[in-house]
Amino acid sequence: MQASRDKRPSWRPWIQNLSWALLSWAGSWALMLGLHGRLALANLTLLPVLATALASLWLPLSGAMVCSLLAVLAFNWHFVPPQGSLAVSGHEHLLLLLSMLSLCWITNFLIARLRWAAERAERHAQRAEQLRRFGEALRDSASALDLAPELAQALRSLMASEPLLAVLHSDTLPARNEASAMRWLGPAPTADQESGLWLCMRSSQAMGPGCGRHEELAAWYLPLRGRRASFGAAYLPLPSAQQPLDADLRAHVQTLCDQLGLALERQATEQSAAKALHEASQQATRNALLAAISHDYRTPLACIMGAASALQEQADKLSEAQRRRLLSTILDETQSLKRMTDNSLQLARLDGPDLQLKLDWESAEDMVGAALRRVRQREPEASKRVKARLEPGLPLLRCDALLMHQLIDNLIDNALRYGQTPGKTESGPIELLLRSMDDEQGRRFVVLAVRDRGPGVPPAWRDKIFEVYQRGPVSSATHHAHPRGAGIGLAACRAIARAHGGQMRLRARSHGGASFECWLPLHEAPTVPKLPSLSAGPREAA
Image (cartoon, rainbow, N blue to C red; front, side, top):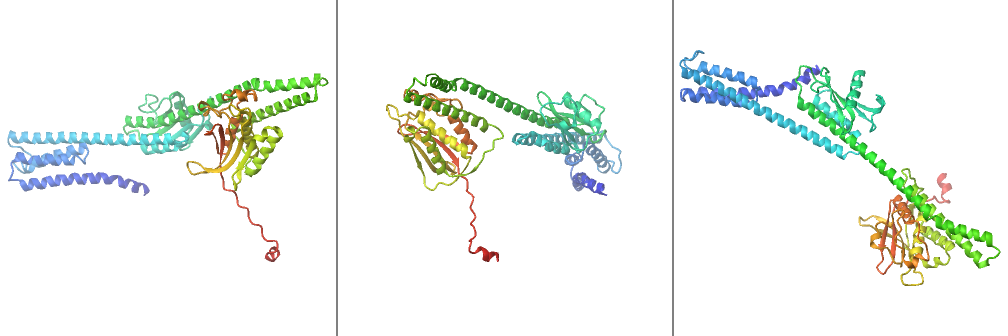
C-alpha cells in the first residue's frame, strides 16, 4: 500500500504533459474546422505544424512523432479530397501531405534536441552547484573527515540507492586490511564489498560498469583519490542492470569523491607540516639552549669557580674586604645562574601543549610589595632606584602568582641592567607602575609597566626584543657594569603574559628610556557570600 502511494506522484508530470499536448492539438483542430472553406488547403497545413511544435514541448520524441503521423492521417481523412477516405487525389496533394509530415517530424526532432540540451545544461548546472557547495563546506570545515556523512548524503541523492563509504582514520594505509583503520558510513558491508573497497583504495582505480575494470560488477567502486594516494573508497550499487549507464554521472560522482580525498590529503599534509615545524622549533630551541649553556653559563660558572678557588687556596692571605667581595661575586653569579635556569625551564613548560596554570585571585599590591622586598635583599644599593606607583582600588588579578612574581623580577632585573642614563655616571630611576586601562576594543586590562630612563631600544629591535635568545645592542655605559644576559628573560615574560591571555608591549618614552608593559585581562571577581548574623542564628534555627 505504501509503495503504491509512493509511485502515484510519479505519474502526475506525465499526465500533465499529455494534457498540455492534447490541449494544443485540440486548439489547432478547432481552428482548422472553423477556417475550413475560408482558407486554402496549403494554408491550413500550417496549423498542424504549429500544434506539432507546441506538443513537442511536453511529449517525448517518439510520442510526438506518432502524434504527428496521426495528425497528418486525420488531416488527409477530413480535409484532403476525396474527404472521408485516406486516398489522395492528385500528386500535389500527396506532396503536400509528405511535406507536412516531414516538417512535423523535423520540428519534433529539433525541439527534442533543444529539450535534451536544456535538461543536460540544467543537470550540469545543478551538479556544478553541488560541487561548489561541497567544496566550500570542505574549505570551511576544521576536519575533512567530519564531512564524510555529507558526501554520503550527496551520493544517496544522485544514485537513488544507499551508498557505503570507507574513509581512513590516518594519513597512511595500514599494511593489512583492518576494518578498525576505517570509518564506515552506510549499511554493514559484506566480505566481498569490504574486499572490493580495500582493493579500490589501494589501487586508486575505479571498478564496475563503464570503468574499464571488473565490468561484470553490479555496482561502482570509486576511490577517494588524492594526488599521491587514496584515503578511502565508496561503494555505489546501480539501480538496475537494464538502465543505461550515465558516464557523466559517474564522472560527477568520482569528482565528489576526489574532492573529499584531496581535502583529507591536504589535512594530512598540514598536520605533517605542523608536526615537522614543531619538531624543527624544538630542535632550534634545544640548539639555542645548548649554545646559551655553552656560552652564557660558562661566564658565571667561571667566576664562581675562580672566586671559590681563591677562597679555598688563599683564604689566609686575603683581607676581610677581599673575602666579602669574592663571596658577593659567588652569590651574584649564582643568582644570575638561577634566574637563567628558571627562565629556561618556564619557557620550556609554557610552550608545552598540556600547560595548566595554578590560577587564583591575587592582590596586585601584595605582588609588587614582594617584588620590592626581593630586590632589596638581592641588590640593596640598586633597589634604591626602584619606585612603585599603584593606582588606588585595583581589582584582584586572576593569575598564577609564581609566574607573575617571575615576570616582575625579570622586568626589574632587565631595567637595572640596561636602564643606565646615557651620558651620566649615576644610574637612572626605575618606576614600577600598575594601573587599569582599556584597549582599542574597549576591553578592560591591568597594565604592569616597568619604566626606565636608559638608552631605550632601537626601532630595529623592538619587534624581536621578546624573541628567545635575542639580545639587543648594549651601550658602553651598561656593558662594563653588567654583562650581557642570555636573552631569555623578556621571552619568558612574553610567554607568561600569553599564558594568562595577555600580551607584552614595548613603548618608547618621549624623554628617553623604555617602558616594558604587561597587559593582563581583567576578570570579574567572585562575590563573597555574607555570613549570617550570630545573634539571629539561634532564633532562625529555632
